Amino acid sequence: MGFCTTVWLFHRLLSDHLSDDRHVFSPNFFRRLGEKLAQVDNILLVTGGFTGVGEAVALSYTLGRKKSQKPSTTWHVLPERDEEVRVRGAIVFGFCIGSFFLTSFHISMTVFQDKSDKAKQRSDKTFERIGYGETVFSGNSVREREIIAARAFDICVLIEGA
Image 1: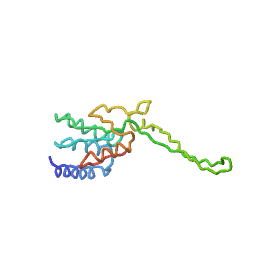
Image 2: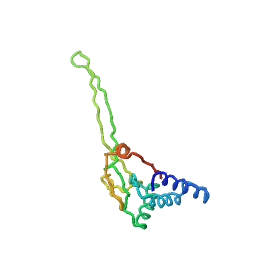
Image 3: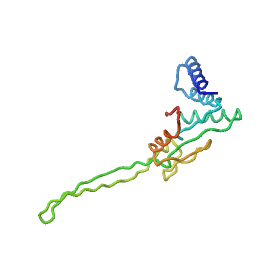
Image 4: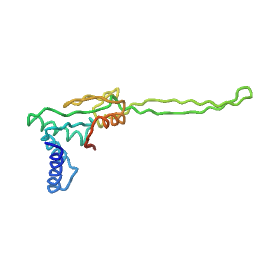
């Protein structure tokens, strides 16, 4: 199936779903989206490795591929950790034997964020591999991971949410 067929499948799924229960963003919609995407031959599904919508689509996609005996093409791209660099600065004024001087210095501190409510994360705040598909670690923060992933794909449909 080509890109046009994929768009048609998505349009058909959306139309069917809207006529069914009028809730576009229900869990059933994302489960069905994964199942429909699994029918497309030339596709690679990539998640950010977090729980929620991406996980729901990826799980049903992976199960659909397995059921139809197609190769697994599910990838999860996670950062090693999600670090946040906090910069604290201070300026010191002083006198030295009648002369005025100005000194400044900066203190930076790296804090690893706790994302255990959104992804599998170890006590040292590194992320764990996902139990299905392939997991790739890229970048030192979610922001870096997003920048790297954005440069890796020519066409990308982002599905994300809680």
